[in-house]
Length: 450
Ligand SMILES: Cc1cc2nc3c(=O)[nH]c(=O)nc-3n(C[C@H](O)[C@H](O)[C@H](O)COP(=O)(O)OP(=O)(O)OC[C@H]3O[C@@H](n4cnc5c(N)ncnc54)[C@H](O)[C@@H]3O)c2cc1C
Image (cartoon, rainbow, N blue to C red; front, side, top):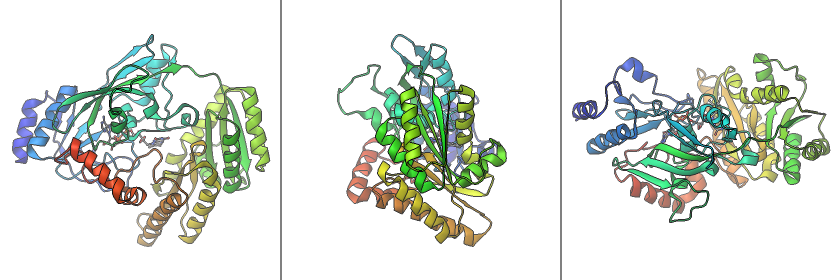
């Protein structure tokens, strides 16, 4: 049957789209969640058109073969990691983009990198805001499928806030268009938002119409250092009660040290935590400085220098790869209501001690979305068990604080168990009904969440 399917795919797809060479297939097995299980796919399809995606799904449906959609493979939850005997469907060759400056929209295929969409919009004096730290290496399709967030999302919103319409190929190979090009549209259920964040479990996004904005005003960057993360957490709550900054990012001492080891910025070694805020007006800068001071900042400085601001934010964006140099990392993505941030960071510190595991903390603090980075030596079974227990415990803490197990990275395979704990049986049933309606044979990214 598999041989028949491969034969049908070879006939249905253009030359070069179907890849079965094991050395090449190997490169498509994992995303950036190195601890997530990864199978050996039957084949990789590098689709060059919506028609290729449709053909792949028709053949897969006919033969009951699972399909794992894949963008750039930078996901941190195992969402794009391969399944044994499945087809990994890569969008990397779907790279068309058109900008309509008058309508302020971009029509994009999913394989473009986020940075390429930003650059294309920038040529028309326009801006596509969502900015995951991985914006230079992740695809816009992956951003749509995970509803990616980022640094400026605290003020400008996340991926879904910029989606006007989508073209999606369903499990049976039909291509549908949901939403459109208008800013307001309440005709029927808002199906585009159902596909955004569905992590390849409901359909394959083959085109998106994205809303653009005028370029933002230049920013002032404010740095605040604190004795500990709990004080920094209090400062976050105070800032967010006073204004909506363009970014508000947290790094604790261990994360700062990890970045300093790679890119020295001259930050004091003794600090307990660092907050980086960006704002667009002088009165906002004064409010942030006051909020930092009121929460006990040990040092506060503001800079209007764009290069310096970008250097500091660049350092924050480098935090995950820098911490990854310390060992294997289980990356949390918990979110809590803003007033609960101090409790979350205090609890993470206790978890680190209880499980004798290093857990540097970074995050999009203004969104209440933190990434405790559970570091361990994967060659040591005891350390691995302690790290896994810490990983579970932090998600339990987030739920107990009224939060979520994932704010932006998605559930993938790493958080499926925790998703069940968060949603409960009735909502899970509802989600299973949606999945069954759109993918009755369960071929799209099966077994990842539900
Ligand atoms: C250093 C680093 C920093 C990061 N920082 C952030 C951050 O600040 N914010 C953030 O949100 N994320 C961040 N990420 C995570 C990651 O980059 C995002 O989740 C990104 O959106 C994934 O895009 P991708 O193209 O790599 O998708 P992939 O990893 O290839 O896929 C992700 C998921 O989307 C599905 N998928 C991909 N394309 C499609 C499609 N066209 N149709 C349907 N389903 C599809 C896949 O099946 C999978 O479930 C970071 C990652 C790294 C390595």
